[in-house]
Length: 492
Ligand code: BG6
Image (cartoon, rainbow, N blue to C red; front, side, top):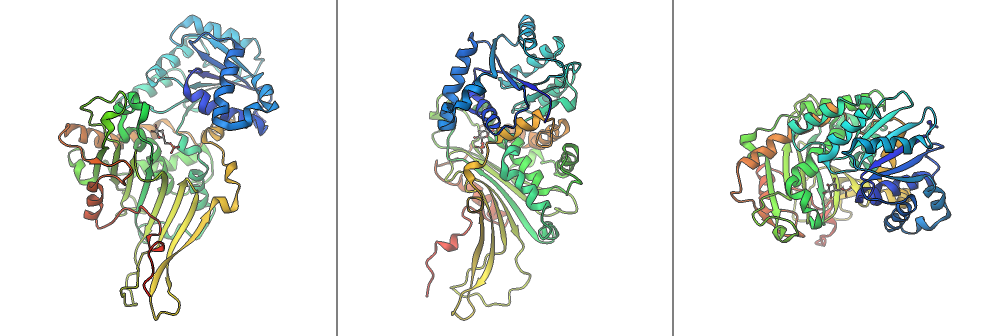
């Protein structure tokens, strides 16, 4: 087990701390995964005593975790938590924080600074930590977790990286993308690289195209303050969707280790053809759900996209000519995150298709959430009916094999990895900059078109008709339902 660690949470009175971080740390504590001597220190402006902070965490953690907080384990866990009130832009308050930490930290005590604060405050917090000598590793390791969004474009991400690296070395920096902490996202690697039969067909010789969908039924709700400036391309594509794409498309790393893994992801990002800003309409669609303007804090003339679909091409030997279609939106018909590998159709169909025959070419669906699973569609012969064909599905549901109640929240895994110094599931500097380099022209291309007319879609639909037209133009269609033929009544 690692040496003792202190997790210092900047922005401790915020939502992320109570909804995600404390519950994740508590679950790790219950599973006895935290190093002995772990301490958690909340740092925020609101004046609070240790007990007040613990009570506040208990109330909100209870909301997030149901009954757990009432168990005896909570009081033991709570005794590890303390609070230090301070302003992260005030140098004196870092001295105060250092004293607070010195009260219980011995020699060789690691420290993880978690920046759960507004992104505009990241540079300030990092600079102050540096000025206070709190990034120095003389007394044990020092690491910093930085939340998304990491910049708003390539230039701002580069500037933030420059500030971060004026204080911390890359091996001290953990840029978080919670998608990488999801069990089923990690399972993409296991599926591809702990099995041998898929690898030979995982390429342009067998795959027609790939679809990656992140559909959300929720609308923007009370988050417009952030969301209206970001829009779906920054909020979902630059980070989560490109991360999923890299795992689907990468070459096998030689080992499951931070740099080996991230080197391969970077190679994929590097091979993505940079989208042309002036041709944005040729390879992407943006849209906004009807009623977006009625959400609190959304300006009446906002043209922020809440839906987008983008085609990306990977110019390498494995994927040349295989388009990757990424789409995501709020207020859609279904909450789902799915990767669809659409295989090529047989080169020649010797069976005569008649009215009762449905032909679907092989398709592999990796459902990341919810109802986590893997599904393979293939053709079967309808019994006792001459030579009629119908697709069938070979299904694997996580819930059939595992207790899905035990699927931990992404933050649980990621926090533990950062404590243990494993950066495999965090984003490296070059990776984050390359991801912006890919998305910047798409964002700028649409921005340059001004507010002309962003198509609308209905909440509860699968997005605008323009998205269907877009894919039809490409000779393909969106896969909204894995097995529509299963709902059809068979003609007899
Ligand atoms: C966040 C985005 O990063 O991811 C949100 O800011 C989005 O807008 C969320 O709703 C989706 O995460 P998940 O885990 O619910 O798929």
